[in-house]
Image (cartoon, rainbow, N blue to C red):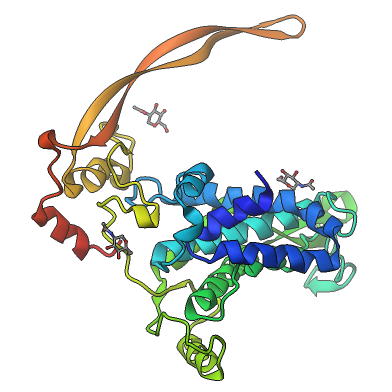
Length: 361
Ligand SMILES: *[C@@H]1O[C@H](CO)[C@@H](O)[C@H](O)[C@H]1NC(C)=O
Ligand SMILES: *[C@@H]1O[C@H](CO)[C@@H](O)[C@H](O)[C@H]1NC(C)=O
Ligand SMILES: *[C@@H]1O[C@H](CO)[C@@H](O)[C@H](O)[C@H]1NC(C)=O
């Protein structure tokens, strides 16, 4: 599967990606197909890491990110990009962040011929007792290239495209906002009388946490969702600009309230909660995890079924001189819990439905 196809699928939930695909390739062909191919794999890895982080951030929530790329593609993913919810705003943000993050890391690692650490401030005084040195991660590079790939997936002039572009940027800004200064001591016998410092990327998990917080405070934009008949009229652009006026570039935005995620929704590519795992019976769990069966199954009118699953793992490993490790295979039976439909396949009853609607997401 080509990297573009992949990225398009990831983002297709929310954009007219099939049109934009051709667009992006054209953009890059102008700078040369070689440039395109150089970065394309990293873009794919980056988008994937975004989705991976999304799954972590939304574990045990009713909506839990696109399950995998295959599902999106078989789910006529390329046609389902019509909605703009709080959840899709997160997908855009985290994917854009993942792509920028990976490209920036690649650059610092010397993976690309044409870029390296950001040395623009090397040797300058940064503050009391420290100067710029070392290898600052080159976010400007990552930002520029990721923008060319990810933003080009938005072809339209309508509010939806504007929202997606805004959320892409919020994702990239999250990378910058979570960067940290790291320093190294110098001076006589490590006295640390002088330090050299550089800016480095945070762990991607931290970026995920940051964007999850932005998701929780995401702003709903009140505006016309349809593109104007004239396509890119000045009126249209003015209306969009007006709606965005009070929104900081770092905030995630969306247009539509989330649907009821208790219900399977094919047009959204949402599988519903039947078959979803939930957690039970471990004192170590957080309150959030401990209530997962209630949130995912019971409150959506489903029951919980128990399944015993054999897990095979390596055990009794012994080290043999030199140098092999020999292990036994041990079988362990673990109990897992899943949401299942009640006998007779009853739909979620109205009371549960109402309660769910009352919840924000
Ligand atoms: C960029 O980094 C990713 C993740 O570390 C890696 O999988 C990919 O191969 C790298 N790209 C290049 C061109 O080395
Ligand atoms: C699926 O989601 C769309 C968009 O939010 C909504 O209009 C539609 O009613 C939903 N369908 C079902 C079966 O809930
Ligand atoms: C609970 O957590 C502690 C420390 O994280 C761990 O050692 C212990 O095995 C856990 N207990 C269970 C039942 O998972």
